[in-house]
Image: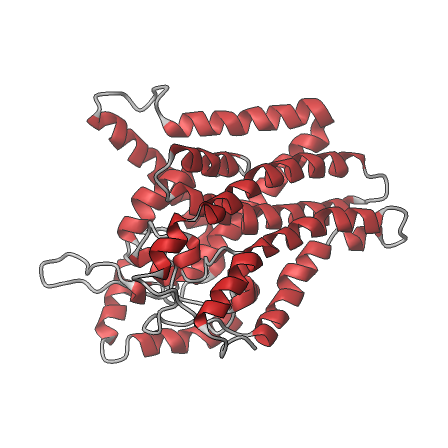
Length: 378
């Protein structure tokens, strides 16, 4: 629909369009209002899931792709200097934290939900905190200003996954698409085999990386300057606060939405790097990370929802780039759908492999031995 628009028109459209992240956020209170007094109250609690994983993949296909890239010499410097884009991502932080608090109250106090409705509510709020909250956090933790990095850490603490702040930047971006990276899924690996390994190894790696940082400063791992301790204490404080304010239901809601959010993050990790492998050079080291080492998806709608997260190839090639100037790379391996559709597909391993395995084999065409090396290292 928008593929033939001039580049400068697309950039102007997207400048406003990034506010579309408010739509899934607004669907949360909307679903609550629709469920009040409804004979189908439990069903309305699942509204966000229906929108995000049912409607959005269909709209992705209808709206189409976005091939527009900003001009490197003129538009990129100007867009990166505009505080508007930075403010937009920072505004999401208090909005999402406020949504989390209100949603906990609704979970504990809504009289019309059975256990099924409460399950739908946890899944819905966790999806918003994972899809929007962790995406914003991901954008912020890559930036240099302390305010942005702290805001990103706070969003991650709200879903009990602060280790991502350390492991993603200092671990994943170093080892991406190699056997050393727990967030890079292997060819033939199912989502359900990937997830428990990702949970465990990413938490362990985050602690190891922070301990190494402190050791270089002559400090023990158990020190107040350990960033993980600080952020997880904030998570613990939120858990206690929700429990004191709303009782057991409040605490259960906080833990439930956190698990949904961090699981969605790891499913997206699975999608972003499935089967891709940086080639090992003759000297035993891996080649430099380029735009060919991450799956790219250029569907306009989900790119607006996710602050260009789907232009993941350019992000890994240039990690400091702000979301508004991330580029579509034709040389990157391309996903057949946006992340919303690919997340649903990943839940069904036989269908996933039928769609994605041929694309991985095409990626390795003529270099199948590299795929064999990857499998033997797994």
